[in-house]
Image 1 (cartoon, rainbow, N blue to C red):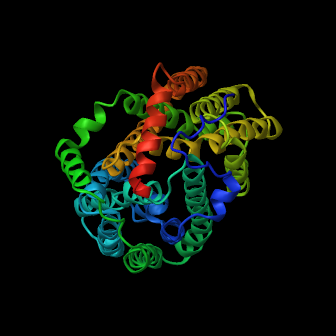
Image 2 (cartoon, rainbow, N blue to C red):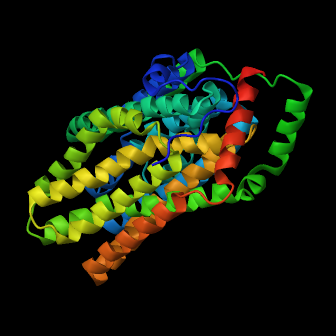
Length: 423
């Protein structure tokens, strides 16, 4: 596996550990905010249980979840636009405050169409912050190692928040759904307050030429971004890769049940994944940081695809745990690398839109994956595992660099660094 190409801007590339120690305060502020937000992110997890507990059918609850998923796609697109238009800080605030208010009223809603409308709006507003938060990280650092360190810390905060939130949410849901959703609303509001008070807007462009470039970029927007063939290839990889990974929530539990294991066994497998990611992802990111990101992404996607495809052969907890180890290793290798690599592809003035498109592709993959995976498994379980294996191979192939890609990435890295350092 080739090492990362040497930096051509004359600035030494720090080691991952050094980059981690010298991350700017903006990275820690956003990571703290997302930790708070994820701890209280109860609605997507518990909305189905809440609705079925109120007497709605599983189909009706699934419909609400589907509308929320469509809102997620729109929210990421809007968030990418706003991040480049009004700035990162206020985009996050615009996301957090309405989400807080809408979530607080959910337990008091009556008619089903109103529930659908409000949860759908929450799906939009709750995702607007994501491209902006990622753009803050890209804005705040200049080198590949620093980007990896920044996204590694950010993902650690997200994973820790999700782990804590699952426990807290379970306790609240067992006592009162009103408390659950009000807690969710309070976490969203606190996220917005943390960002509004502590996060400063990124520096203004340093020259008239920068202003002109920014106006041009904003005028053409997503059309210009989608004309970037390297980005489109990356987005296709993301969509296919997330389709594969989301089968951990569809094909895996169905297979666990079919081979005579229990829901508790499935919970232990998912718990193993969560524990490994929480403890080892940041060190794993440091280990692979020295290598070309395209190859790391390819191996990561390959491990996820092969690991999940092998699930169909496994019939006991020991062997299933081995497949979990394999696809979890792929997840740890590829997650932070993907975000950092996208940052290196992004031209100045387009960070929000590139991140927005990434999260749109991510959301589509995780939204379509359960529908297609469940339907294919119902026809023939082996058809799903073969599909997953082939899709993993396709995702890995889409990661590999084509002609001129490396020189394009290096030139963008140099230009991006010069923009941030004023050279």
